[in-house]
Image (spheres, rainbow, N blue to C red):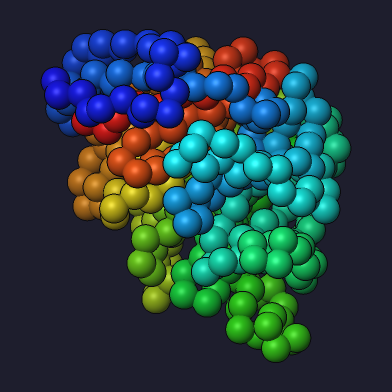
Length: 338
């Protein structure tokens, strides 16, 4: 395999992990993964697990999540791959986890989550963050507290669906929509849309065009955590849900490492439960071309729950997450895409 040039920024200070992946069954066929040549970078300024992430102007933003031994954080840091630097931004208004970030131009949106630690409570808070002003603004609360649900943007409408109710264990089917133009005019409220057909939590949520993908997830949280391979696709034009291509195995806890790149969905790490197997932390990097089946791109240098991941300048970055499911780690890696 051809390996692209290593980033000169890190030189000899970078340790290299070479990962060789053999073929395995993904979807309907044997799809060989690519070898990824991972370079270990300097650690993040603070290890993060179950954070929210987005990319703006080629920089990687990591919001909130757990720090250290499952302690919720308000901290926000941004990574610049041009010089390998991290810059701390203004803290979020709440110390929160179990949420994802949605980008609307140069504004980042957040909704719900678990506040104040591992045994924290679900919240209904909704915030927008203006990147240029470095300022948070409160928006209309969700109709009920939720955590571990999906937030997505289609056109000028913000969607929140699924997730956990206030008891931290009951999966909600509710699907609410906020019209952002109405919010800008001062009159917005959350309105009901078609409910999630198979309620679950800690699934990955992304939008492509008029469709929202709810990928994997688990049933329940405090009583049990049953990973699911199911993918549901919401069509905003018809206000209806349809089944998408199942994952090759049950999967959850991939929210911070799931994103759209060049029209394909990329999902990095998480938790997994293969058919007939037991729940474990996942090293796999999966890719979906809409209209096709899931493929295995490669593997992380180590299994990670809820790592932060992004593609910047043709390179895949992975940072933070948890190697044990009991606390955040701060290691960071980069690999050239195959």
